[in-house]
Length: 98
Image (cartoon, rainbow, N blue to C red; front, side, top):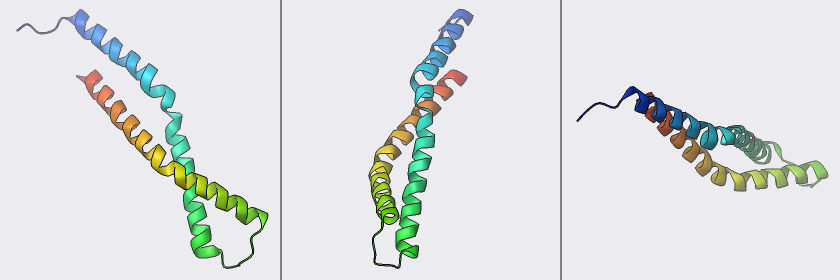
């Protein structure tokens, strides 16, 4: 079996880099969104578990409760997306490095 030609290697690398630009890079802000959602969820957890000792419900507490609940629902959804994006990115990088 003959080794691949230089032209084939350049075309393969260009194709993999284009796939990286078109499929992975547009979803890169997902990492930042995931980090912010986790931070909001953690802040809500810490506030209600350790700091909230009063029984009254005011506007600030209600808004924190709602945002923490929404963040809690988004964490599992975004976790799967971020993990899939990470592994796809690593796979494309590994293929381009060959």
